[in-house]
Length: 196
Image (cartoon, rainbow, N blue to C red):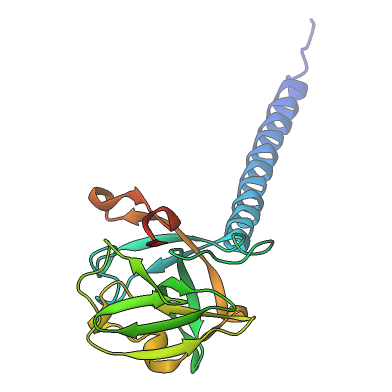
């Protein structure tokens, strides 16, 4: 009479395969988490997401819109007139603002008779809500900018708190990404030029 041994080997192999499957699954989850963390920090190193809070940039930017900002835009270059930038407020670094660059280093900005003038030449500004009702003159130093909100008479900007140190710049606004119906690339310098 022959006796057969129970098949222990296939059971061990089956259990071993199950353990390997779980190890592979756990390893894939770990790899996915690590990749997500690296992507998150990588994206945050080169960009920021900013919520427009208020009406100072009407009609260009609406209250509640979300904007994607490039942190790398000015690493090798300075902002151009017309760029919309995000920066830390000079008098309160904890507060970030979004405004349009108007005056560049070495320029004189003069606001009078409802017109913005750069070195005596009026700016063509089709994007503003209404002409400014205030006046003043500012000489922009080498490491500073003069910025204004597009809603000239409802904006806390350089005409109130002075010139913006370039070191306060966070980045250049690139596009509106929320809400979806408002999605668009943000126009910059092609809209702003000094009339001749």
